[in-house]
Each structure stands twice: as structure tokens, then as C-alpha cells.
Image (cartoon, rainbow, N blue to C red; front, side):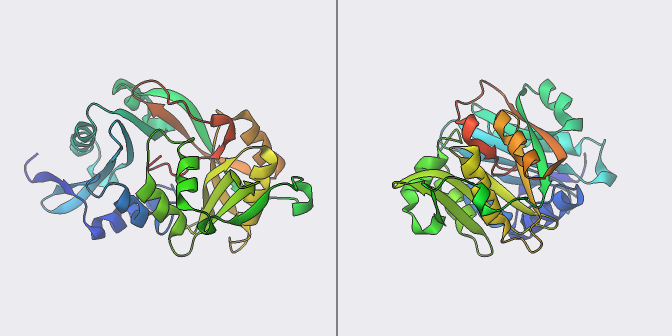
Amino acid sequence: MTGFEITGASAADMVLMRDWADEEGWNPGDSDRYAFAVADPAGFLVGRLDGEPVACISAVRYGAGFGFIGLYIARPAFRGRGYGIRLWHAGMERLDGRLVGLDGVVDQQDNYRKSGFRSAWNNFRYEGVPQGGEAEDGDAGVEIVDAGTLPFGLLAAYDRRFFPAPRDAFLSAWTGLPGRTALAAVRDGRIEGLGVIRPSSAAHRIGPLYAATPAVAAALLRRLARHAPDGTVSVDVPDANPAAASLFEGLGLAPAFETARMYTGPTPDLALTELFGVTSLELG
């Protein structure tokens, strides 16, 4: 592999990685890279052939014991030549000794199993314009508020119910970047739901979507959809929460894309029955 080297990603590389993900049909958020960068600045790797970027991967460290693999892409013209697997090994080496998660597209899942990953659940991306009105949400005891008005410590503690490690810097950026809307459902001073919508190349992406009940999830979804130009939204819905798929189908959204959440060890103990939409297929 003369002329091939692996380096950390530059700011320009992060833009390129986003564009490659878009070409793969993954519909990444327009500004996701800014939140990605603060999660783990050294966690993004690029494979270069004679100086030209030909492959990328993210291998982000969270806390002392968890990591997440994403953005694993080799450019079509350079596939099957060993560059991607070299980058894969570099990313996994960076996360050595940690429990590692990823969201794998269908045609790569067998390869991930060969690398020691096991499926925990499937994510189905539901897209469409939520049907119905606020009158149908039916939970008068919950108030939907701007998440930015709440103490950040409360948001971070709530997020920890759905993610295996602290990710405060990432969460702060993810919920607060310009152009995004983050809403929380609050009952008697207690957070019972959180949702974030962000612009993307195609349908606006919603994630995370956490909620104590399907009614709270529906209320957040409809309110967030107001911030999409034509009301069309996209949510990666885990089948580990059976109520989630039923909710989205009942709201008129249809499945359009599938991935599998996979881990190298035991599935973390998360509040899956309240997880209606994962935050990011790239960073977990």
C-alpha cells in the first residue's frame, strides 16, 4: 500500500466526510460535524492515498469505557483494495479495551459480526409528515418547553438514561447549534421527554426522541415537525421499543432505511421503552 497513510481529520475533512455520507444516502445533518468535533476531536480518521482522501471512519471515545464507530466509508473507486480495512483496524485500535457500539447498514452487518459485534436491535428510519393535531396528544399534565431554558445538568442526567456514558460536551453542542430546535417535555419540574430536530439534505432529522409515553413522543414529534419547511421529518426508530414503530405508523410515517445497533459485548442497560428515536447513527 505504497502512498497510503492514516491521519486525523481536519476541519475540511469533516466537511468531506459529511458529503460522502450524504452520497451514501444517509442524509446526515447539515451541522452535525460541529457537535461531532467536540465529542472527541481526535476520533475522526482519514485514509489518504498519495495525499488524496479515499476513506474515513469515526472512532469516538466516551468516558473511560465506551466507544462508538461510525462514518465508515471508502470511496467507491477505492473499494476492495484494502484501504478501508486498514482504516477499520486503526479505528478499532483506538477503542481497544472498551465496549464498542455501532449502527451498521444491512450489507455490512456480517462483516461486523466477524469483527466481534453482536446485534442488539434494529433501527428503522421512518419518514413523512406526522398526521393528526395537538388535540390528539392527550397529556395535559406535560408542558413542552425550549430545552435551552432548563438547567443543562438536568438534560445531561436525563440523557444518561439512554446512553452508556457521559457525553456532556456533545449534548450541549447537539442541542444548541444554530438552526436546530430542542424541546423538552416537563411534568412537575421533571423531564419526561426530549427531542431535537436539525436541517439535513433531505427530510429534517429528529434525534434523539426520548419520551415517557407514546403520547409525549407524539406531542414532541408534532411540535418539532413545525420546524421542517414542509413538515417532513425522519427518525431512526429502534425496534427494541415496540410502541415506537406502532406510534410512527399510526402517525402516517413509513420505514425507508434500516440499520442494526451492534455491540462488542453486553448490550448496555438503557431505558429502551422510552427511546423513540436514536440520536445519531454516526455517534450513537
